[in-house]
Length: 120
Image (cartoon, rainbow, N blue to C red; front, side, top):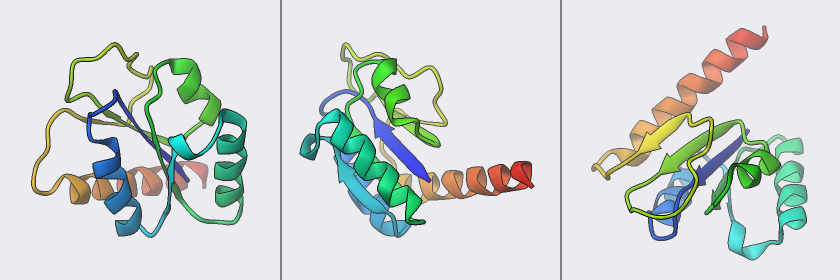
């Protein structure tokens, strides 16, 4: 499963993504480490090996989001910025709470159960 955590610079993507990946036992990938094609190949390789991946990426356009073809999109917009909101958002974070990571984990788990039931 590919989980994309996106939003404008400074919105808290890394603050959310790193501990969230650890919480769900997924691989954390920061976009800044890879070019576009390298990122997609690396992420697809992780998913093909049976692991989940949490991608921390700014994604200024919907084209950038679509290129990664994520299964689940988390949009963070706690700052005003010129960043295009993805067409499809599965979970929206507009402010932090003490249980933000746990709440997201529950939402992703529900999504996975729904998707598995739908695919059966």
